[in-house]
Length: 429
Image (cartoon, rainbow, N blue to C red):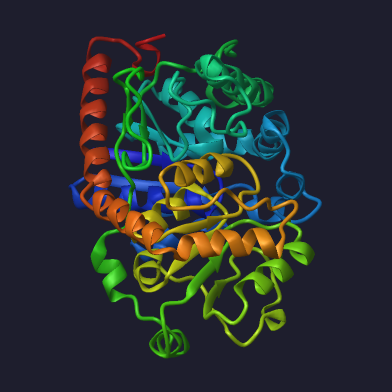
């Protein structure tokens, strides 16, 4: 079978889908990934056919831009929806044309993140199955509130309602541009309501988020989607990193991935003071942090596979993105989480509840004291033991295989519907 996979977002959105595409190809299928140009290197490293979608996510994350301002202010769900929509709405028509052209002879469209409404519309136009994928649990449930809301912001009895409310808010922010592109690009009628009945697969570990008992059958927690081991095994670290790791005890890792726009003038000095003289590996990512400001106990690295590096460190300081959260836990390491936006507070709370992280450090008001408390908690022997146990459990999962099997099953079912004249996207509407 042939699959077109479309996503739009940061590294954390593209990397797991590159791993999923590689697994689909290894299972005998064809898969092509469409994503932001700056995030495609993970697909290229896995030899996954890929192409860029219009737009520039790195530009949007700069200070003063839509997402950069969101990160700096740590705004609420409405501001998050509006900031995301500002990027998507400017590119929706172009994305729909690009995904439509790529998917012309596909058996299904697999879509995620800001490209989700585009993928659903293209699949409807082509009358092929639409399979949602996500690293964020957005299917309504009573077990926890929408991950886009701060933990504890709503009483428990409103958990399910919070998902419906936030998902509806996001749809309303995207609706006008989506409907305009549906008419102009796909000759489809505008939609009044959000899609709610299509299948959605989560590249999330059941160790971190067990399958909610009240989710419908088409919403499946598969497990983390990781790159095939041979690729990581072939990667060789630079000599400077190898020498640093061999020169002493396991260091602290610090990296905020694709995050940019946060208050470096407050966060970085507080972090340096809290770390003191401890050995530290630092990944600047998209932050634009000037490495010359860092003390000599910091080893600055470029793009380095988490699966290789994290088992060699003592704990991981990060922003709470789903990908880094999973990679740190899979490696059996505690976390210090500094959430900035989106679902990051949700993952920080999950790690705290599981005993492998202290309460999150406030990225808007970071202090050396709060960082120091979180680091000391992460270095406790009991915290380290708990992290090792979670890592052992997560490594027993094969989320990528589970996702491939689910995609095969869903695509085959969609083909059967097409054979009897039913559009797979609208089969449950």
